[in-house]
Length: 155
Image 1 (tube, rainbow, N blue to C red):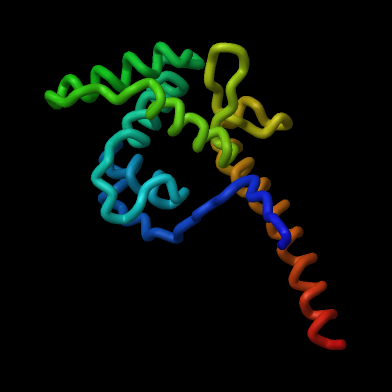
Image 2 (cartoon, one colour):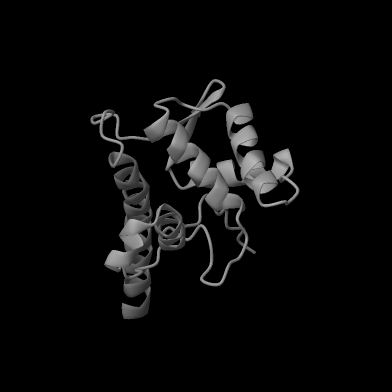
């Protein structure tokens, strides 16, 4: 039996972006996570959203690439504000690994950076392009496989 090695998994959803979402940071953050398949439609868990909130706050408001401890403290404050127990370190690391695996975040040394296009490092939106560039490489593999399937069926 052939063993398949799954290297990455992406889920992308085409989700409407109504104008009222553009007025709320939290709603837009949820939309972004849902569109990139980071959460499910009725997902009530806040972990990945709080981590994304932390990352975006550090990158765009504080103009700093955060360390794990920075992210952990930020996320813990969000939970404590709501009277909830902060997540374990491993839960935060799991979400970071997911963001790294889809190509949105990269780790350099002790900090987490937005994984921007090397040709456009000053353009933070290019990180989204990077996610889709990685998907394009998968598309080529699938095209090649489908082409071989076609050949096998034409025999």
